[in-house]
Length: 244
Image 1: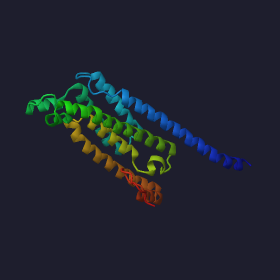
Image 2 (image 1 turned 120 degrees about the vertical axis):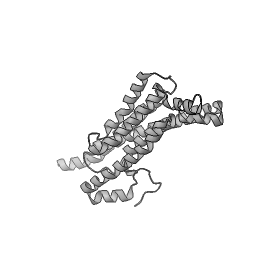
Image 3 (image 1 turned 135 degrees about the vertical axis):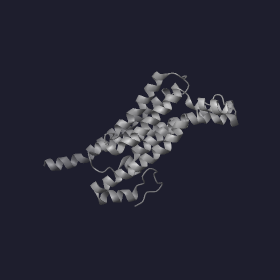
Image 4 (image 1 turned 90 degrees about the vertical axis):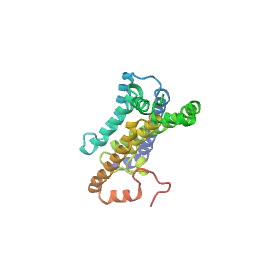
C-alpha cells in the first residue's frame, strides 16, 4: 500500500521540483540582471582601491562554486583570480595600459585598448558606440556567464554524485567553465587591458585542459554511460541539432 501511494505521489513530486527549480531560475536571473544593470560602473575614477577590492571579492566568489581544493582546479582558478585582480586594479586603481601608450606612443586618454578606436572613429562616435552597444553587450555576456556558473554548480550539487545529463548539461558538458570564460570575456569587452588580453587565452587553454582531465576521471567512474553522453553532447559550444 505504501509503495502504491509513493508511486502515485512521484509525478506530483516531480512537478513540484520542476516548479521550485523554475522559480529559483527566475529569482536568481532577476538578481543577476538587477546587479548588472545598477552596480557595474567604469567611470568612478582612478585610485579608488576600495572599489578595486569590492569587485575582486565579488567576482572571486564564483570560484567557490567549483572544487577549488582539488589539485586539478587550482591553476585555472588561480589564473582566473589573477585576471580579476589585474582587470580591476587597472580599471579603478592604476591605469598601466594608459601609462604604456602615453609613454611609448604619446597617446592621451587610452584608458583601455578599446580607446585606440578613438584614433580612427573620433571620440564622439566611439563613446556613443561604446556606451549604447559595447557596454550593454558586455553586461549581457558577464551576466549569462554568472548564470551558467551558478546553475551548473546547482545541478551538480543536487545530483549527489550521479552523472548529470539534464538541464544545462543536456546541451554542453562543462557549463561552469564556459561561464567563467564568458565572465572574463565580458569583462575584457568592457575594459580590455594589455595584461588581461594576454591572460584570457591562457585561461581558456587551462579550462579546456581541466575539462579534458576531468572527463578522464568521469569516464573511469561512469564508464559507458559517460562515453555515450560525451559522444552526443559537445564540450563548450551547444549544437543547433543534437546527435541521437
